[in-house]
Image (cartoon, rainbow over all chains, first blue to last red):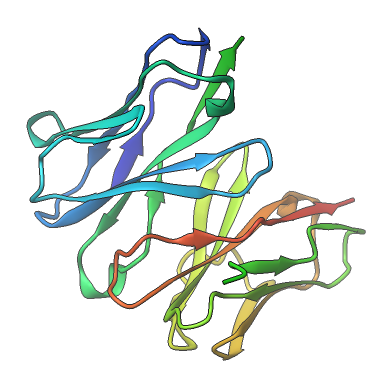
Length: 117
Length: 114
């Protein structure tokens, strides 16, 4: 069965600190997709990144970086030099490739990040 | 594009009343999803449509819940009769083309059933 675990419920850091949000997933499928979404206080969910299971290259986008390791079934998210605007709930999600699973995201419970000035 | 539009943003109703949530997906998107967010259960997929056809409704909690997509630009999620445990934020999302594309979410409807 699919499962996404975000063990960190809440994280609090001071501005300019680096912070890593952990995500561990379970799936029996060999082809799958992993996502991170951000939910700021305004409530809407904002897409951050998608990776497929065959692409283990780490990705960097500005202050954001993602580390995908199939060996440990992890897809961790690091924010470098955090800012107050990064305060939000961050969700990791998994989607399997099967034809009838398209878009059926299984979300983790989310990690609430609080960045204090 | 205006993004996914949901209405109303907030809904307060009394137990037993019918509630209808509305969604307008992004034009050209083939998939439409309804998710529910609660503290206890997190984000759960209720149902999704492909080209206006319901594909998977296994997440719909009970017969009290129903969803329709009469055309490519409009979907509704109806709860009849509503119960206090239905209180949650309901999100609509849409995506384009290939499966497993990123989802674009609406701002959600905060439902409170008293």
